[in-house]
Image (cartoon, rainbow, N blue to C red; front, side):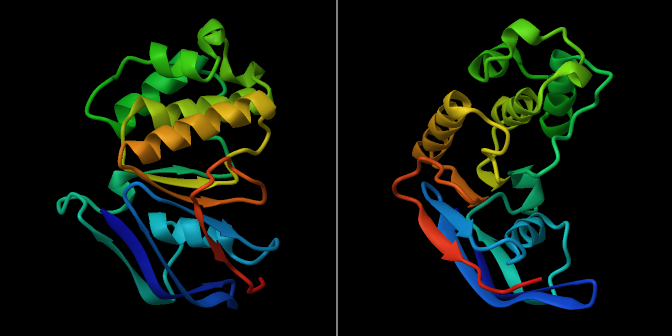
Length: 201
């Protein structure tokens, strides 16, 4: 599988965010998107997943399921943790496993992996920012998808949780998955290539 973008341009609010951006990342690889605030890192990820219109250029996925689009084969972890505060930790994860998968998967292992198994019955409204982020990470573990699109994935995570996330990412890559991640900080992926955006917003 190979995900690529060719001569991409993005406009937001009538302003050019970036232009002429190309990238390619294949199974077993990670590509980090770096650049100053406003360079368009988040916009590029949102463009890949179909949340931002492509002003110019094209995005292609070779070797994936021909019956599914990129978004249907990807997990997108954005700035906002997509949680329902009135639902418990377990209920949130069950919802996402059912929504993203073909049925309700076993949530015990992903919750334990992110260290939230003892908080399974706690309403999500009571979670700290770091715990909410860990629950969002559990969402990408509970349903297997080959493409991970991660926007500042270490945000709000302490050092231990960052290392666990790095382990999840390394395992995903080793299993043939691919990662496209926007980041300001090191992700613990020594073999990751880098795409630097220099445009402004």
